[in-house]
Length: 217
Ligand SMILES: [Zn+2]
Image (tube, rainbow, N blue to C red; front, top):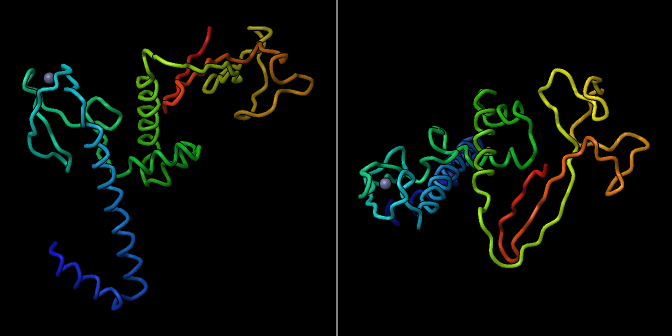
């Protein structure tokens, strides 16, 4: 839009009713989220190779669903920044950030589905794609000062029909809520009973934003 046209648009805003203003704001927000998601996808492409053959020789090859497409000069296949990522085949890319926020807030699948206006099965699929990608994006090698520590999580048997007791694999234990305190009498920390705790090594490279974690045997 030309600057003069934009100025005219702004000058007309005071004529809007409160309802029209609210509608305009909602439409602008949605558009903003959409462009933000798309520009993040394109920015992620900077310096990345072909997801099929890792070649860095590629040229722009038109747009698809508002995202820049590329053609690899080596394998001739086309791709965009979302190819082979949790975003590929995600039609509503504008909901990418909203979905990330729901994950951050720790919402359940059903709450996420309600918030995004999608089916619970869609929210479930997205969540698993995001979580898989976190595992894939852990650094394979690190160099520098690596700070590591062990931490313990209570074992989750979510989805299991019979909850195995840590002391006796035949006996079942009562269900408990997510997280929570250890049963009365059970100590916390290093001296705690670790029969139903899963040890996890968490590490971070000093000065780098990456966190690596590994479940220990
Ligand atoms: Zn290629």
